Length: 257
Image (cartoon, rainbow, N blue to C red; front, top):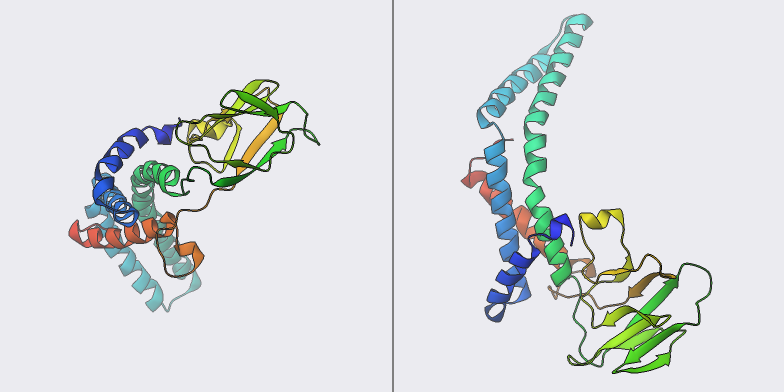
């Protein structure tokens, strides 16, 4: 579990409570509402509206003075420098609060990606997979164990998704590499430095393994049934609703930029 996964158990518990009464579209819209609300409140608390307003007035005055200037170049240069300084100050007053206010969204994005990005296979579905080895060619000590029965499986291209009470193990040198079913993830790999921030829900391969990664071809979860394919997933809906609701909160909380 990475840093941005820390709140996922709480998000998941709430999601499970409202799941029987809602669909994916409603829940993602709910998380967009929460994200927009928290981000708006954090930005308003961290920013300085009075100073931003004052700088905005000064900047407009300097810009007008610059546009109306009809003197020599040295005066024009001074006005341009002053205008640029005011613009940088105004940007500084909004940039850091905006960056800090966006952090809560990363927690939500991490959770939503793990929960809503991929479709859960049904028992018996054929899930394509690709085993990528560290070296060229696949070793001959790869096997599959199903309900205690082991068989060689050098060239695994797919797997029949197990029943809920069935356990399938992919083994390397009689050592379990992956146990199915796994949590939804398009790839299992060796742990990387960035996994301390965002973890892989399916876990990691052993550093000593000859397998570099195992790639899965899960179906994408479809939330919207209209528009081009890039609109169908959760990501477009989440960002569209977050942006739309944030614009409403700009007026509600009288947020200044």
